[in-house]
Image (cartoon, rainbow, N blue to C red; front, side):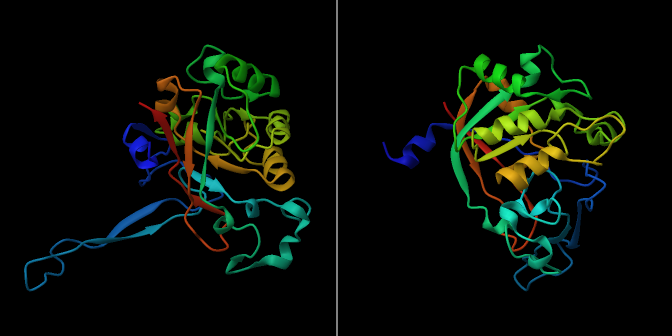
Length: 267
């Protein structure tokens, strides 16, 4: 069977949240804004045709997005020991920018930690452990392999329409802790994603004071992170493994990019 013939029988599950004014945005990044610069009727062509267009203002880490390896440094160095200061200018970062991330097609694996614990949403202060990942892997009947996209469900998408709660600045937000990050790094996954604004666990009242999981994955292991995913529909399908497609915008020198990840399931 030809690839495009197989795709006709494929169920596509969108793993991205919508982009619109008022969505939750980390205080470290500019909010999403969209406004029409020209409305239909503002300019009419002789044949009666008219066009509308907009201006969009947003950061690279707004909505469902991919963290480039250039996003985080540790002690002044990026992944691979690159000295951040030497490759940084107002035009962007010359090494490990999001434009260097090649479009990805691979096996995706869903590790549903909320379902593992029999809840719809994990508690605000829950730290996902390596043991949780291993238990979710066993429950799903899959084995995480090198090159996989590993998506970790906490159920946090439920709070997306409540920005104050979703951001976790006061009550915290669930996510992987350092041991879970090491577990993923040991398996050499291609990319990993989760539903929260910062991917990793945020302690109540701590905000983004320290982000050890970002250091482990981005700086030490060279594993990109997808944040603010919507894993609700995927969880409802019951699929533990699936085809996965991910392509960021080709923003040269940028530290992140909006993405619209897709899960492909056999119908």
